[in-house]
Amino acid sequence: AMLDEVNPTPSATNRATLYYNCARASANLGRHISSLERCEKALKLKPDYTSAREQRAKSNLCIYNWKHAVDGKRLGWSR
Image (tube, rainbow, N blue to C red; front, side, top):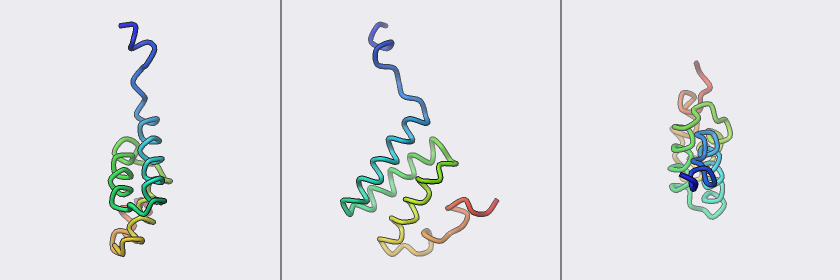
């Protein structure tokens, strides 16, 4: 349809970037649970998204969720 040509569905990478940007905005507003949820969505779309992993760790630190903040497997530090 003509609408699909004008407004295509964003790629998985673009959707991941949108979720990451929303996660950063949520964190800046002090809404760290929302930030974590958006980081998880970004990482489902793009598992190697380092910035989303870092934001997830920062938000976990802000809510005193130490275990997940420093868990190397969740951060992708161990292979």
